Length: 332
Ligand code: PAP
Image (cartoon, rainbow, N blue to C red):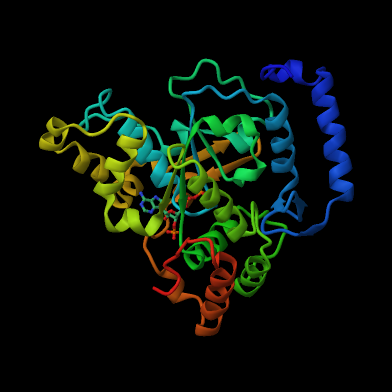
């Protein structure tokens, strides 16, 4: 094992060559299915990954060296990642920036985190980043190197029906122009089969749920809907989880309210920095920044899914989550 080598060195690195070989072999032998925005997804250790993300996972296992102070934000796609990045960054750095001239006024929430699933492709050197280093990932907990389990994780999940609709809109935006648009019926079928990037949805959620039960001091499990309902409670939870609880003085100064306001959909989506240009995710993909802010509400699925579709998703989730103790607001 070596630490993350530089991008130039990587090509000569024998381990990197092994990874490339293993990747080529996996692509030829793993079960595959048509994807949402890539031609195929591959089922690797129970999860559907696009080819580049699969390679990133192999690289991660060989090279990534977590620091004990690292903080990871994990989520299924479209479950509130952008929002949580802003909330975590501003909660952790509340003594560094004033709310009238805040870093997030001219830096996007995504720019404050390394996206682990793509930053490792090509291999990135994270050594110059601030402490704590902030990383985000959509990989299931069981797909991460075991050495990462000593670090703190915040996990956020969301009603799968809203995830599906958000993901469907998003994927049609990033889908290559030479592919026909993905219809909602196709997306729905794929989702119910569990075939979506990083899916099955329920397996990914359960991987963190189980880990959070086992290591409650290491994994803070949140739901998008609870943050919407009581954002201030969640900010206090985050601060305490990071070992920097909100003090009485901070409460009196209204810091929690300021954080919530700064990170609100209304505020973030109207900032110039989040409206113009592209978000770069490693060398994998550039995504229009405004694509991360659509409606930001609970229950938009009602505008798209029939009663029958709703029943089918709710039924799948009820069955998959049975006995886990995890309850979802699937019947909203
Ligand atoms: P990602 O997984 O690609 O990073 P992610 O940020 O998790 O995306 O999800 C985007 C969703 O969060 C969008 O939901 P929608 O399509 O249903 O509208 C987006 O609008 C919503 N979102 C982004 N920022 C916020 C925020 N500050 N508050 C609430 N919702 C938000």
